[in-house]
Image (cartoon, rainbow, N blue to C red):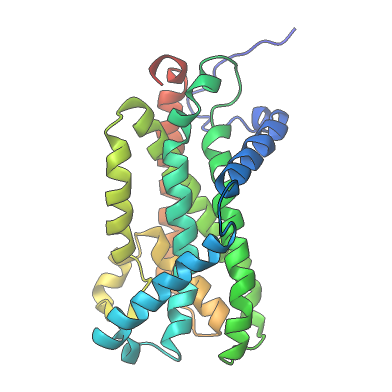
Length: 270
């Protein structure tokens, strides 16, 4: 006999249930990945082409015309590449996770499983895109003179932080989109604004010193700048990074709490 009981109010994640349904998580992630690339002309090349096209546009308008190339340490194209890769992971993952619950309404309304599996599985294709883009970026980094150094061991750590941030925002938005359908239109606007308040195209140093701590309340500030410093061998801004990590943990708790509040009614409202 299997007894299904609601979680306690303080328990944001039912880890034993997620582990029991790990195969479903893998199946849904594989389905999203295969659907994303099925019947496409370029296939996985989109994962590389999109950040490269953004890099070219940002290099021209922000670097040359905007003068930001003179404000960064080293090659501005490398600076942009190290910022666009994690940003593309975040933007793609959040966009897919936000719509995932509504898109899987037939599955949610028919069978029981931990609903958190759905937005988590939606991140699968974004992570694959990120991995492919990182592998292709290696020759460019080597050609531009970025060799191996010890701090690059921290790149997977900051990459994992970006995945956690993506999950935190995506899970919260998926619950809001399920309950209030007009939030699906807010998501794209939110991501556009979020990109310009993150250090994707400009360095952290352009923010006045007294405001950097407030600016770092955006979790992507510390994660992107930390990943960039680790990848390119530059100095770390540990103060803003620590503030962003704390903000990330708070954001994750808020996102999970928002999802938990809606989870028990998902079968009725999707």
